[in-house]
Length: 219
Image 1 (spheres, one colour):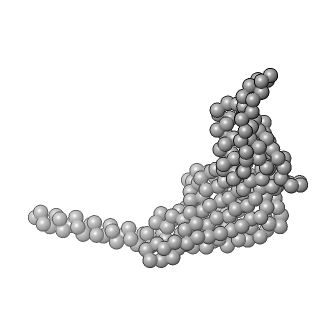
Image 2 (cartoon, rainbow, N blue to C red; image 1 turned 120 degrees about the horizontal axis):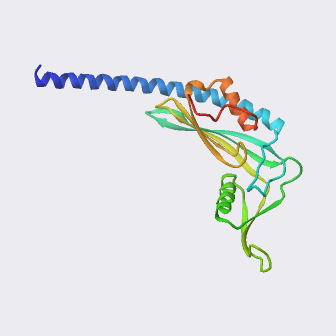
Image 3 (cartoon, rainbow, N blue to C red; image 1 turned 180 degrees about the horizontal axis):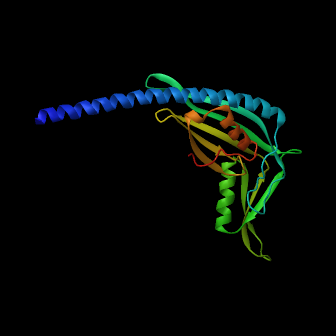
């Protein structure tokens, strides 16, 4: 076979692969859009019901010695943003957020004292991820140990959210879950084809702090 014919065969194989990849991307994008539509309708119904129920929240603690009173989840709100992808308008993100408030009464002042770097980092991280407003004070205790510590003062109220980012090329949805089981952030990716009501029930259970199988390694 001549060298020119070898190049011809290589070029043909590459062109065929490009066409195959382009077709696959189109199919993946369509599957992702369908999944986003399913997720939107499910979460829209979920938010309506949860706003009536105001379910109890999991335990929230800035540190092991700074446990908040029993909390509840209220004011669920749903939002979606779109973007242009290959001259088509598609879903970029779907987000649901909520407030975390005391189960009884109004938010009240809470304090936590720290004097070790690991504790300081943990408290700062929890305050940040929870969207908690706080004041930081340096405290001197001449007659006590430790003599110096850092005191955080904040109100017992926070926010939780789930942000879903669509990956159209790979037919996946990326979930970022904040404060669904106490302070903290979790990330998980699931195939678009999994976005059915039965599977989304697991997400709903996660949001209301019930046992679930949503945040596990995809098979």
